[in-house]
Amino acid sequence: MASSKVTFTLDAATIRRLRDAAERLAKPQSAVVREAIEDFHDRLGKLSERERTKLLRAFDQLVPKIPGRPLTAIERELAAVRKTRRTGGRKTPIEKQR
Image 1 (cartoon, rainbow, N blue to C red):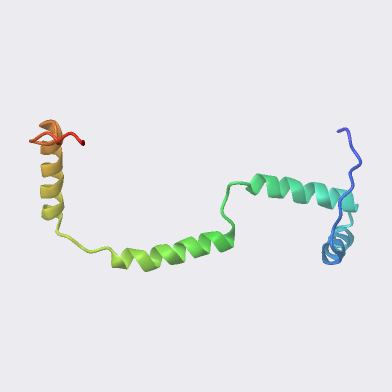
Image 2: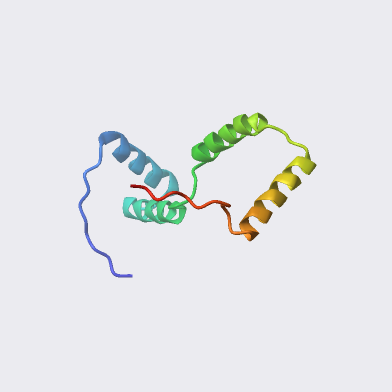
């Protein structure tokens, strides 16, 4: 794999974490950065654990607020919608706007 030298400006806390990770893993800092970028790239477009938890919490709060309806009422409403769609929609034309 061909390598390129690049320069980044990182804050002191990030540098400490990079050095600590490299020391713990007994790897060069460049290897730690490469693996971190690869892991980050693999997660692009996927929810983080924090985002997933937030969405699940919102779902759990909203679902109980959905009003319950008897299945027969739902089937009746769907049948009416389907019937209307088959007949072409409106019975009277919309007046032209002036």
